[in-house]
Image (cartoon, rainbow, N blue to C red; front, side, top):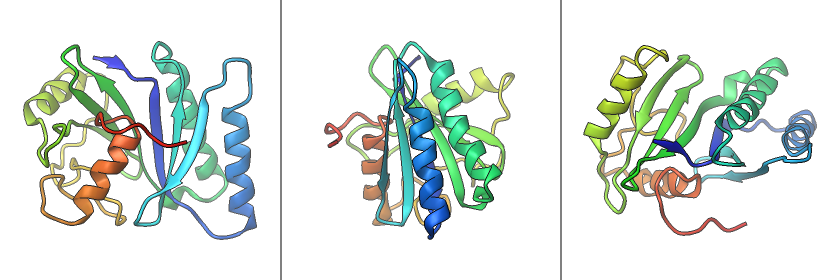
Length: 185
């Protein structure tokens, strides 16, 4: 598995001038420097904000540092309650993608591997990744939490027939988890 160079933090934005200033400061911090990554935000249909960072695929450490800056800054400024997750996509040599999802409130990780063009997950790939990372990361043991990130403030199963399923798949495509249409800028 190789990193794609993209990662995202999902959170519920707060109303008010203080939060708006804070997000501008976060963007400026991430985008400062000579080799600064591209950072952009979008809001999904459920009111969650996705801050996406795009950098070099060969610099996973810097990507994770930038995503951590977002999480820790929101937490330090009193907005940690709105953090949902952070995800970093990887690509297998055969083109399959898997996102490593960090559930902020649980402090745990889980792999998420949707099958391109379907409403299914690649459970075998998820199990392989989980087993490889189990000694290095705190892996989510509660299978009810280790599900596709739903944007209703909870976590929903990716294989459900829920109308939100399509939106979740589109969000994951736009953040590089599932190959799909190019993301508009």
